Amino acid sequence: MSIHGAIITGIGIMFLFLGNLGILRLPDVYNRVQAGTKCTTLGAFLTIIGVGIMQPGWFWKTLIIAVFILVTNPISSHAIARASLKAKVSLCDRSVVDKTEEFERYREKV
Amino acid sequence: MSEITGKENHKVRNFLYLFIFLIIIWLALTSSIQWQELTAGIVISLFLSFILSKYYLKLGFPPLSIKRIVFFFIYIGVLFKEILSANIDVAYRIIHPKMPIKPGIVVIKTVLKQDIAKMILANSITLTPGTFTLDIIDDILLIHWINVKTKDVDEATRMIGERFERYLKIIFA
Amino acid sequence: MNTIVIIFLAVIGAGILLGVLRMLIGPTSSDRAVAVDTITTTVVALLVLLGFIFQRYVYLDVSLVYSVLSFVGLVALARFLERGI
Image (cartoon, rainbow over all chains, first blue to last red):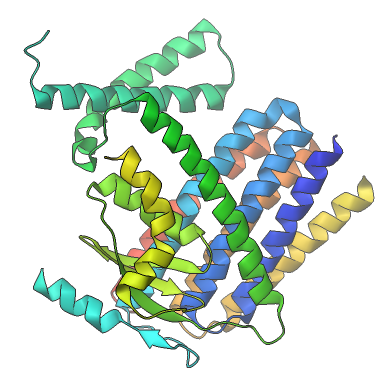
């Protein structure tokens, strides 16, 4: 095993942990989605690529899994966030601006 | 050959795009070039792209050229840099004991026309520092921003969408 | 090498526990769905890592199928949430 792969995997695992911590700490659904998508996407990407570097025979397969996660993870989180917007989940009280109504007016105009 | 109409041309192009994409995935999944596996892959890819290529017509793929491919690779580099800075930014906000967040929902505009270009832009915005695409109608995007710096539409467009649109405009011109 | 592997597994396990905690206390159903999304991505990475530790190639296939199924399942769940439970 090569030391580079182990270091990349370690960084990825740190980001995975931070993503889950963000899910627990941040105040409302939309902020949690932000932490959840960004940190876990990069974390899983780096972990899987790191395993591919440690085990060179597996590299192409791990690359496929990593790119698949990189493409689909934002889509599934976007679907959940949009669904919670439609179900009228409210923002937390630290929010400074909410332009959803302006957007809904535009939707009716079209 | 010259009497192929524009629409026929479009169909053939979509077919080829899908076929090449499927073959690349097949090669990476099997990771062998024995002729039995390769033949099976070619037959399955031909069959699937023959059935499915008509559903991709309205996405609006542009014709292929060297300039587009070069700019696409530059775009991927820019995207990776933004993903890294986004993660460091979000990690800092999570670890900090007081959580320096200032969340809000803002609206931005885009100049892109094709559906596929808008999809790539929305996914890129989701992966970059502090922003998250919630919804889209025509050329208006609804964005959740974890650290709101401005409430004005044009200013927000310049701060969020500009750095990707610059490249996507050339790729999907 | 053994120590590094144990540290990696412990950190991932702690992360999954935090996600499960959010899934248990989440005030709305959307919160729980977001927690499930995060946990499934973490588990895909964990499966690939376990495949490396046990030296079994088949774990990669398992994780690929798991990620495809979790993507489809979460999109279906989002369609369900949209109506407001």
